[in-house]
Amino acid sequence: MIDPPLSDFLSAGEIGPRADFAGRQNPFDRLGSPYRHFTRDEWAQLRADTELTLTVDDLRKLQSTHDPISIDEVEAIYLPLSRLLALYVAATQGLFKATQRFLGADDGKTPYIIGVAGSVAVGKSTTARVLKALLTRWPNTPKVELVTTDGFLHPNVRLERDGLMERKGFPESYDGTALIHFLAEVKAGKRNVTAPVYSHLTYDVIAGERAVIDRPDILIVEGLNVLLPNRLSPESREIPFVSDFFDFSVFLDADEALLEKWYIERFMRLRQTAFRDPRSYFRKFADIDDATAEATARAIWRRINLVNLRENILPTRPRASLRLTKGASHRIEEVALRKL
Image (cartoon, rainbow, N blue to C red; front, side, top):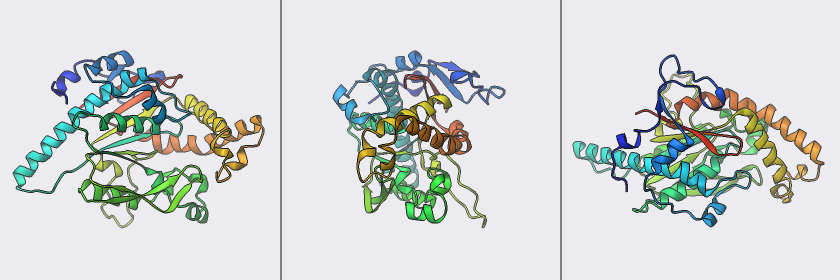
């Protein structure tokens, strides 16, 4: 799809230490940043002649109601990213084929796996869906699948038994062994690997329902803590990280105050939509007054989501291949790409 070498793609953009978006000090300043930093306009120029394959109607179907995204955002941010990923995927496939020739092996294809991480309310789901749509529309029409780690949460009955409902979304609330087993099988090129499915309506894993992933060319894995290292085993057993299976990773970032604001706005909007469904786990919040609802949302954010963000999610930010930082209007204002 893309002919220019990777060095041409990376010729623009600032190199070296700087404070990250919103004035937060980059922890690598004293050592030299491992990232190349781009303003929105600098990054947008890297689109080159990459074709826009999404329409306004396509985008409307892909975005979450609480996470606005425009065609301008796709053109400025996601088309350059699609172009970069085309280069990375092609290079990885070339290395895989060369290794196969060297080993005299024929293990079949290995999917390229992309992780998407970030806080609650930052817009991970929309980003993952837009990426999937763009990658599927490459000229060679690769097979692209998307899985969220929500399906690997322990069922509510177990979380309630273990006193973890207030820790839902924290590392201990997931079946990490099952997630790693799933990724290992997909990465090994196995056929018809299944993953559990989660319902945001009932706020629980759907018993007996499985998504089937059948040897995709590209797999996108979206979740809060996908870049978090595993806890060491007390038996000193070797334990892989989820991110060990990633070929590329994206971290969506925003200031904490913005994330809180977006979470509350989403909560208030859902009171008029999904929360009114009798099957909704959050049905009890649909009919309370606005002031009580806003106070409830703020309390949930600060008691649960903010703690998870600070303790588990933000510390993984430096591990990402690419960081996309949002401003107040949900637009990506800065891009940081890890140097090879």
